[in-house]
Each structure stands twice: as C-alpha cells, then as structure tokens.
Image (cartoon, rainbow over all chains, first blue to last red; front, side, top):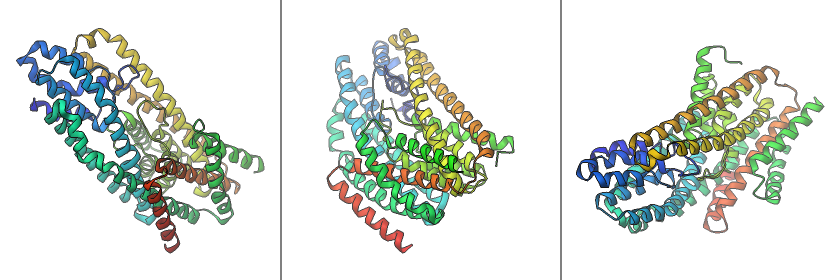
Length: 245
Length: 225
C-alpha cells in the first residue's frame, strides 16, 4: 500500500482538477486513490474492483485535508470494512474536513499570509516579502498534506476520533486570531502607503469612500458583494471623470 | 508600454494561465492571489513596483472573499495580469483606478467562466458514467486530465482576452488629473471591502478583539513610519 504513497500525495495536489456539481471532488479523490489501491489488485481483485468504484463517488472537503479522507478510506478497504460502512465514512468526513480546512486555511492562514505579505510590501521589502510569505504558507500546506494522508492511513475507520484529538481543531481559533490581528495591522499601513503615493487632492475622497462603501454594502446585504459594489462605484467615478475631462 | 516582444506576451500568457489554474485545480498555492499575480506580471513587464500597486488594490477586494467549495467567487489572477499591463507606462496616480476597474471586471468574468468549467466537467462525468460505474482507472484518469486541460484552456483564454483588451485600451487611457479621484475611489472601495470581510469573519468574539488590537498597532506603525 505504501508503494503508491508519493504518487497519491502529488495527485492530491490536483484533487479539484475535475471539480463538478455531480461528484464535486470525488473523481479527483478516486484519481489519487488509484496508486494506493494497486496492491489490493493482486491480493483481492474483487475487492479492488469494488474499491475503485467507491473511490470516485461523490466527495467534497477542503482540498488540503482530502488526504485524511483518502488515507482513511483506503485503509478501510485494506481492512475489509463492509462497503456500506465505507460509504458512510466517506459521507461523514465531508463536513468536518470542509469546515476545519476552510476555517484553518481559507479564513485563517491564507488571509494571515497575505496580510503579512502586505505589511512586508509596504515596509519596502517588495517581492521578497511575497516570496517568503508564499514559502511559509506552502510549507505549512505541504506539511499538513503529509500529516493528513499519514493520519488517515494510520487511523482507518477511527479517523474521526483521531482528527478530533489532533492539533488541527485546537489550532483553528489561534490561526483565526493571527489572521484577524495581521489584517488589522495591514489595513492602516496599506492606506498610509497609498496616501503617500496619491496627490493630496485625492486623500479626502479615499478616506471618505471607506465608510460610504462599508455602510452601503452592509445595507444592501449579501447579494451585493463589495467587489460588485466597488466595480459600480469605480465605474461611476470613471464616468464622472470622463465627463468632466 | 504595450509589450514589444513576443517573449513578454508569452510570459504574461503563461503567468496568467498558471495563476488561473492555481485558483481551483492545481496547485492552489496562493499564486492566484492578486498581490502575487500582480507582482509576477510586474516582474515580466520589468516593473515589479507597478505590479505590486495594482495587485495590492485588487488584493484588498480579494480579502473579502472565501473561496469555499461550490460557492461562486471571482477569479482574479488573469484579470490582474491584464490590469498591470493596462496601467504600465502611465502615471500610477491616474491609471490605478481604471486598472482596478478593469481587473474587477475580468475577475467577475473569470468567476462566471468557472461555472461553465464545472458544468463542462459534469457533462464529462455523465459521458463516462459507464467507465466510472465499472471502476475503470483509465476512465477516472481521463476525466481528471480533461478537467485540468479544460481549466488550463479557460485560464489561457481569459488571460489572452485580458491581455488583448489591455493592449487595446492602454494607449487610449486618459491622463486627466480627474482620474486621480477614480484611483482614490478604487483604493477606498478596496479598503472597505477588506475591512468588511475582516469584520464579518471576526464576528463578535475574541477574533474581533484581535482585529481591533491589530488595527491599533497598524495605526501606530503608520504614524511612526
């Protein structure tokens, strides 16, 4: 089973490569499972055929943590766990792996990394700040990916309990605090950086736009995202500037 | 500064494709973030500072977005590459706002193209249903490779569209003083977007206090620097 570990790990990097509304990342997980299931082919061809079908069925989770599910499901196949139980395990892992990964990476580490990079850029470190931030982020991401696959393979059907006792749920709030603090630091510095690069006649408008957009997006609700409102506001400003120029 | 060499155009096309594919398919290593995509485009054009400025404004908008699962979210990367090209050769004070407008527009287009990609992948799944039902490894691999190739093509076309549009608009960009105000609105809107996203993520608990503490430190540093 361990012979295909490296290939499975790299295939997990593209687990969302064929993302679709029917099976979501299911086919991507099946693609990553294939090298790990190879040993089963010679040992138990019937079981292997069933496992191959199950491996590409519906699945969704945070992509970086898909290895937890992959490892656990493959281990369960080798342990001859009944197919119905494996299907239940697959389904049960979807929400916790999605929620943990989204909170840890998308709402935590990613904004923290970008905010740190912004601080570095406005401090004059330029592209180097970005490179360091990217290297650190991807080191954590790769480390987590290796841990995820190993944890899944070692735990099998007990993966839920193992995951619950692991470092991940405990770290989620801490990464959230880090992200909040770093975004808090980065925003005033970014405003100051842009003010230094804009002529004074635009300063009042720049500062004034912030509460206006903030309140407008809050009043208009979730259907009007800040990007859409920003697009409209900048477009409107451009039209006025064009008319006056 | 319209890219004068085929190498520069090829570099921008390649970079835009890489950052577009990075968003969802491979390797999801934050290359698709506007700040990174912008810096890369700036480096290719020989002006990293330009890329960082355009990328930073668009990054402020991106900080409001959580790229969660089936949700529809913008694809900033290819549009940022075009936006950097659009702003190149111009005074940043005048062109930053219009470049942001351009980048946001293309990011929406990118988000829409992701929906089409997912639907096309779904049709492939239906076409290969028999192979999937039989557990055929070659079928699974074929679906996966087709998905990756389709996303690469999507990102390439989006980047080509952004570069083409930027190259057409770039010499026609107005230089009037009034466009400084458009840049001010763009930056202000971006800061509001990032702040709104941070407040929403922070909720009412400890995370909000950390955000407040961070903002205090940031204000202090802004005054001291």
